[in-house]
Image (tube, rainbow over all chains, first blue to last red; front, side, top):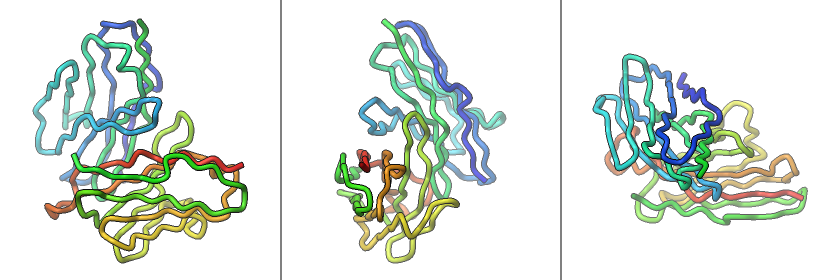
Length: 111
Length: 119
């Protein structure tokens, strides 16, 4: 069975702090994809990144970076120099035949 | 990325009536679409997987007679909440997988979501 665990329910930081959102997954598939989505208060899901199981290279996109470690089944997401606009719920997801989401982490960035 | 359009974005209906939510892939063919339900401050829970031309596959605990799914074409799937009750009030989101490349493990694109309120 596929499972995604986001142990951090809520995180609160002050603007300009760095913050890391944890994601741990379980799957028996050898080929799979991992995703991060942002959900602002409007409810729409905003795609942030997709990573396939064969690509363990870390990725950086502006203030965002992702650390994929297959050995620990983790796909953590770091926001550097956080901003108030980063406040949202962030979901990690695992895709095989369907897509399963973690419980989400609510990030609040205070000015 | 590809576009998935979900309609309506908000709907209020009376208890006992039925509501239909549409999910369209606008610029790609989606043989598979997924329907999720999200309660306030909760995660997205997969309700069912909709396959074009065949019956939907429902997750355990989801009533298939209450949540009717029709995937009649490669670009349209509908979710009908039948005889809606206040406990059905929720945020419903669809997603469609672009399977043009033939792989199942491709990105799923999400609709904007539908906030259903049953009064």
